[in-house]
Image 1 (spheres, rainbow, N blue to C red):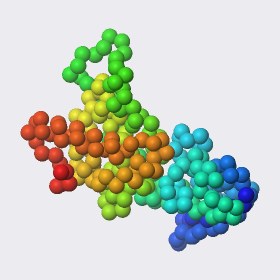
Image 2 (cartoon, rainbow, N blue to C red):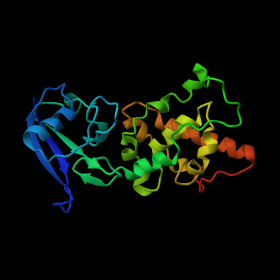
Image 3 (cartoon, rainbow, N blue to C red):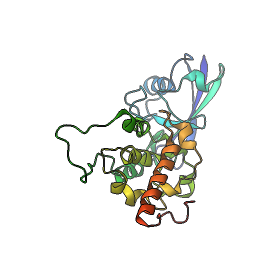
Length: 251
């Protein structure tokens, strides 16, 4: 089948603003959008720039907006976004991040927020250290199993409508990464991350639009994990006789 790819292009060295360039090529319905982009780059226009790595939905590097929705190019089949022969597929870079060139965005703020939540294991020093490994039950593991699937693709960050109005919001991906440790029974958990999560630009900025959950390529219940984290913060603050630092957002 023949498809037209309308791709948003921008080269900071030569362009004052972005523009759309159309490429027409023959593809198989079961080809991936990434295959089409690679064909363009290799055989039609070597200046087309985008990120890719594993090409199997694991690294998360090729998140972009395809027909108005955040998705991984390597997991999106042509037949899923092109209804018939001659269809047009519009491809744009992820939102809320500065465009470096074409479909490649600058991820400094995104990963800065990720690092801020301390996305690593911090042992609970109030508990005796095990002689060998930390033991955890299946039920204890299941509590934070969902957040472990996150590949930091940035799709949820791009789709989040809160960031349109509040660019200082830490973002759904960072909170999901924090939740992976907050709910780990072997870990120091929330205490170690309270300052970054319990603030107006932390978990409380989330307004439950569920866009992050809808676009997650790993089917993580992102909004659910954010709300669970809010609940844990409330419980901890109430146990201490303290108020949450929500700026009036919590109900």
